[in-house]
Amino acid sequence: MSHTIELDFSLRAARLDAVPVIDISPLRRGPGQAVPGKVAMVEAIGRACREIGFFYAVGHGVPQAQIDAVYAQARRFFDLPEALKGQIAIERSSCHRGWFRLGSENLDPAKQDAGDFKEGLKIGRDLAPDHERVRAGLPLHGPNQWPDLPGWRDVMQAYYDEMVELGRRVIGGFALALGLDEAFFEPLLGITMTTLAPLHYPPQTGRITERQIGAGAHTDYGCLTLLHQDAAGGLQVRRRDGVWLDAPPLPGSFVVNIGDMMERWSNGVFRSTPHRVVNVSGADRYALPFFFDPDFHAPVECLPTCLVEGQAPRFRPTTAGVHMLEKIAESFAYTRGKVDSPRPA
Image 1 (cartoon, rainbow, N blue to C red):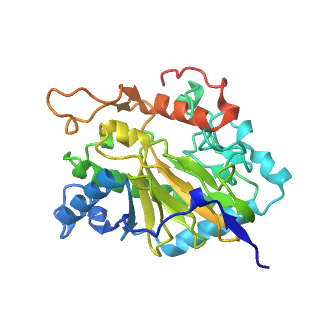
Image 2: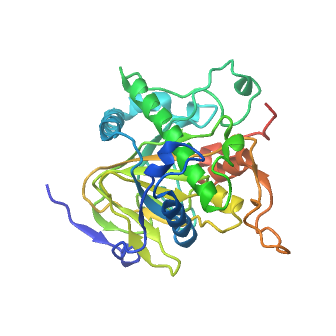
């Protein structure tokens, strides 16, 4: 069945011409190893992170069959009736895990008045109730909510673990691009606040305006994002001059982008770039963003290589946990007034 889609002019984007493709396979050999092409790769990562904050990563080593299996399980969940999905609703979680319904996340409160036209899941580090951080009531730490679907948890957990390792390699590349040792961030990772967030964007028809799009214009909260997107497309990235660029799916790649936390760490050297999703495919869109963030207690302050002598840091010091809690409260109304000050682990 064909659908008529009329796109508001403000949502139109130019063809992609600024997001580079970078082979990150040299990072798979481990920190400190001299690998052919590594110097050029580091230079390309640094240039991309300074200029637009996005790049396509190829040579990452994640099997396509594993990615396909995750998409299949994501569709399996999102196809369930709302009553069954609601059994693991995010509002039931003590640590921001589980399903959120269509429109309940609003990434651009300044412009959207109906929330994002998507639903999703939050799958984090699965900590048992007797873990010391859970017992201490540390925000964002605790058990996942898993749907009652045979085999579902195993597929998602295996992919989650794979992406944690990929995130560790990519942040090592960021460290090199910032003039630091490749293992610089390792002591700050600890119990990483990593999140796999499968998303489903239903088809939109008729006139699509900024009142409600798939994901409103926003920057990501955290350190770095590793995004796999399906063939439907819809991702748009805003260039420095304000022009929106399409970032279409590239087979065999992840889209890597800088988040607000990395911009703070780098004192603005690396850019957290606004982006949005406008699903004009007329079909369902699925995406697999993975948010790689450090330990809750990690200090987030200007890195030693990112401050010119005599210059003051652009951002006040904070911690990863406080930063994340502030950002989550901006996008999810259900969290406001429910999160206490973090207690030490």
